[in-house]
Length: 77
Ligand SMILES: [Zn+2]
Image 1: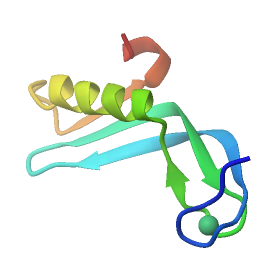
Image 2 (image 1 turned 135 degrees about the vertical axis):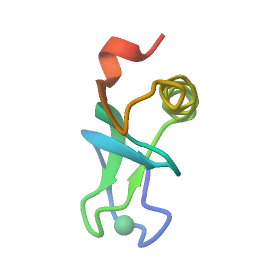
Image 3 (image 1 turned 90 degrees about the horizontal axis):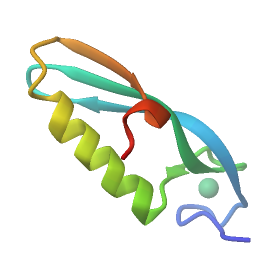
């Protein structure tokens, strides 16, 4: 089992919400597969998920809305 980079606690697979707070808008991605530390709550993502999140943010920041809420499973390619 992998351990937390912050406190070396156990990481648990869990879906979380990712929030990107940009200059002109806020992007919320719900249901993101992630690992959460059972001890300190630190959230980390796999390499694949991190790349998907970056893609999603790049796509959404061109949408002319102040707050965009998407579900990871609907937007991840
Ligand atoms: Zn931790």
